Length: 202
Image 1 (cartoon, rainbow, N blue to C red):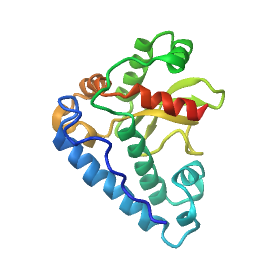
Image 2 (cartoon, rainbow, N blue to C red; image 1 turned 30 degrees about the vertical axis):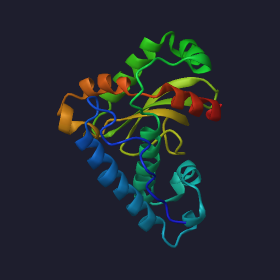
Image 3 (tube, helix red, strand yellow; image 1 turned 45 degrees about the vertical axis):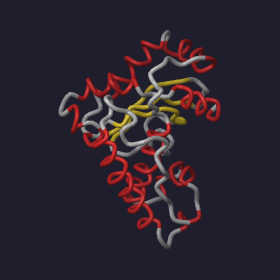
């Protein structure tokens, strides 16, 4: 079963002005597509051909660097697109809001920790909000296309929100101003989608 690039849940210009249409077109249509294509090549003829993406990611130490990089790239980007929306920017509500308050004290503190995790990630990588093994929320970051679901991650858990801090995610609009991108992204976060992932992860 070859993996496929899922359709974006919105138009490429839907997240403007915070994420511009040209960045979206290149990021989704070229970068993410390349991860999918290269993942399919890397798993061809192996047992991973019959596994779900989650199963591969959870046991990533069994597989080659190509599977790790491209499987991670496919997983991470699929999650990323799903938690963004043109109607984003509102604060979380309900159980997720309660869990954020319990873990971080306030939504502003969560935002600050995610921005710091993204800003201080040297080189390429991701900042994550995860549900840890203890069921509590935590912020972490990973290099390259790794993620906290991988059995090689320093801090493991189920990612429910991630911010891509690879330069291809923001450089056309923000150049070297990563903190400006990390501020703007919160205008398009779909916290209802994050809340759904939180319920599933629990």
